[in-house]
Length: 289
Figure 1 (tube, rainbow, N blue to C red):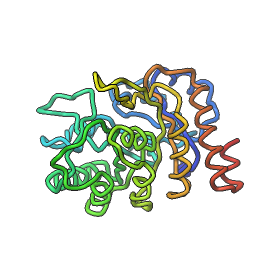
Figure 2: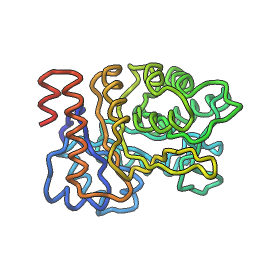
Figure 3: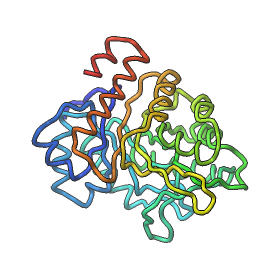
Figure 4: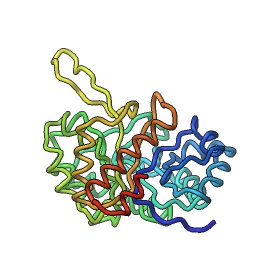
């Protein structure tokens, strides 16, 4: 399989309901992101993915590699992920700043961590184990947050910067997560972007959220559901992030209430147009179609 160049335009998340359509139609798309857990247990889907990997750059975004779990990384699962990525040679592999396993049980959630030296030491060890196990760099994604820990001794940007410095990992900057978390926790999303180490940013994400009531308080909580179009404030923050970081592969995430595939590519086209406006060069305008 020939090595495809790392894309700078916007790609889309390839979920199983769209897989057959994409394999048959080979639609115009800059690249695809997949969750390996959807393919490891589905040999036919994995075979179709290997076919697509010859024509499209692929990014792998893990949801079962729980780098924040005190019990450690599941080495058997890591081997399964390694086997899949070796078969498709993705341009990046990423996962979450969170924990989702406990005593062998996988939880269907990405749970938060306190930002202190103890947690940092734990994550440095686990990120090193993941990078050694996968044989390549691992990008760590900033979470969507709904609570903070009073015992934290660092803010999230400081914690992520320290994790990069000590582990050698890179970062996946989820722009929509910054918007969601900044609303929920009351901080400046633009200052957050300014604080991230620009050289460590390997990929950007954009996704939709829903607005829910916070019980009897009357406050509105943004929930990172990946079930709707991207909101205007997230688009504005995305343009700012591009100015700060430069061109980066950008993913349109849509995991729930999946629309027609054309809706995803339309969102990707909007991201490319924003990039073309920010950079004003022919390369970006060509990516926008």
